[in-house]
Image (cartoon, rainbow, N blue to C red):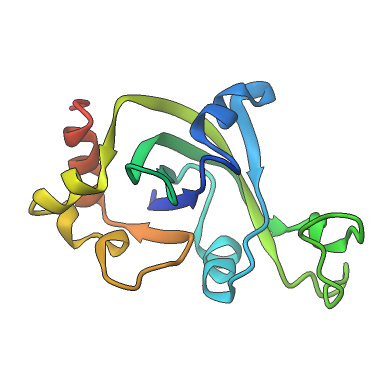
Length: 156
């Protein structure tokens, strides 16, 4: 059964335009260093799931488009590379600790769906991303929220 997710990224670090410029318009979603988000990457997020690509730490905060998971969770090999920014000395091939998935671009919204737009809609106003103190970089999205975001983006 297809599920839906919201992945947050700071556009200065990796934007939806960066994904569009990636070879084959796909990339690994690595570097997640939160155990709750790691568990979702490892256990819940599956090939074929939909992703809302959310630009955080920018003005305005907005969902910039969508992606699809093309490879389910697997060990984040960057955690094993001492010279990499995501290195974790506690990780090993036998006990990987951190996981990632691969995603591919589906679409960039012509008009990003801003946080203000989400707040005004009866369905999207209840999304996890809208809850005070919600800082996880990966969050579940309900099918109703997924469809409402597309409605707000002008895609029916």
